[in-house]
Image (tube, rainbow over all chains, first blue to last red; front, side, top):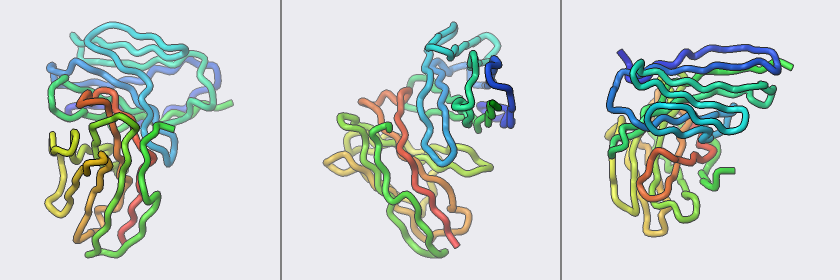
Length: 111
Length: 113
């Protein structure tokens, strides 16, 4: 079993839809959970950063962590064509061990 | 723009050759991380430097090496290149060694023919 699993998609939604992106993980030591957005031919860009369980909201984006289920989600409300990108989850145990990334979900928002 | 710069943007070379990729972190960031991204493997951590010292090593091949200089820029050296080394190479930087908030550069696309 891989440490972090992420459905690669592609996921195609109409403009204005609510998008749900998810990752599951196996390492219960993970405490920090990040979402990165990567446009084609660009570097990943940090979108959201959460610690432990709970929700965090930033504009149209909400990150949710359920440590009991080892499951994290990123919700995008009122999705826009400019949200079309690959979304990568990343996790850390807070120590000196490197971040572990999911392989990314490719999202297309159709106008 | 993350503030992290990488050169060159593209590199085409032949098997057996050696190349050097360069990264300048954001102003004030002491940590530099190197990653390799390929379609089948995703984003793979290679190595982390903090203020000139190696902090952590990931799946970095012995043919690859890196260093961080006193001005904090970093170089990743790839030698005896193989076709399978073709990938995107990203560098990221962070304040201190707080790796949970890394800022990525635009990457170097390496093609080995």
